[in-house]
Length: 495
Image 1 (cartoon, one colour):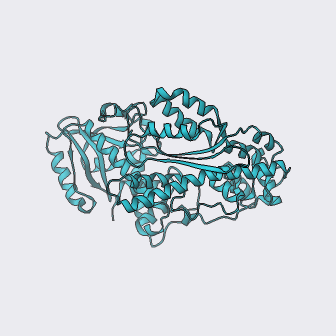
Image 2 (tube, helix red, strand yellow):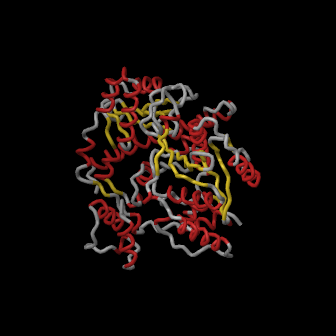
Image 3 (spheres, rainbow, N blue to C red):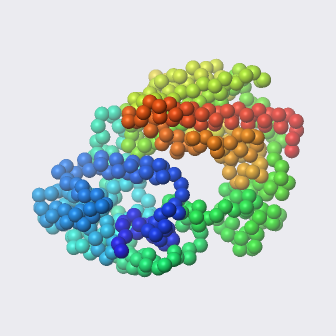
């Protein structure tokens, strides 16, 4: 049996995760499309990175022909005319790795370069690079150094062609951030031993379930908890949850009055005990600041690693959809307006101009998490300076329902979360995202990518378009209904 670089890193995070990846991959949950999209993005970043090494040669043999890949790599290493090798493949001690870039420094010496689609180093990269050093050294490669090649967040795309020399930063890895061969060897030996066992290792759920990445087997190891479990208190630290459980306290109903909690957490405990929604006496005053016409607004974006259009940086958001529900005065019918980009063309101007028409003369613009929409508007102002004054007026009218909910409302069904979907489902009868073809933002981005793909049939495009319009419109409709309900509750003096 041999393990890959990615499986070794998974085993560093959790041995049970490694075991499941090898022996029970069917237990994985989560969006396969999302995982594939992340992998494809990393692949595209890697292809652009190769342009920084002219003359480099790719080991093209795929995962089904790894022995051929090892043989071709050996031949390229022996050819002093090859300045760099991409996807060089080596095996040692039961571990197989494919390196992003193996750069020749002299006739016999090489530098290992690991390409990441992130914009800076992360602690867990040390094991990623450590296992490669271990295998390459064991395979007889003379390594003269290792480097991390990551995206440069300050790079501004000119809209023509990526300049790999500026798009990336190649940084030396400090000695204190490297993993020694002895530790790598011990971990490899342990992982291979665990994989040879008839049953997965007994690993209790913990921080490793979500750090450094969310494990694809999270749901398998973390079954659903009761709605009143102490871990569902808003923003409660893991240490406090552990203290409560160690004291035999599993339910919020058991938490003593003297246990230290934040004001919001104590409010959640009280709401759970009463079984009723809590509304602050201050809510009516906050709602009174709304001015008609009221527009309820939501944006959908993607944030690709490689900038799409002129003026963009890595991971800048590309706005592709907005939804607005507009109410001219109290009690009036609410009208809906939409924009959805249906091609990969640069439609930032059209996105903004159509939005300005929909929210023209608005008194208040209600959003959920003002920081998100405000940041997107700031980016539009940077890209489209001729529209800065219009954008500034929009920003001045933003009214953040999330902030109001956090300060003045709590329902036991929130279960510690203030997400729009959780809030809407808790306080609005029949308002659910469960039956929608698109039910969350990441999925919306994936569906949009399929919508604008020229290979997608017209019939399928129509289906995808309807799904995206329904999802984004559901968000803004939820905003309008929540405001309506809270206004009734606050005016009635509900407690």
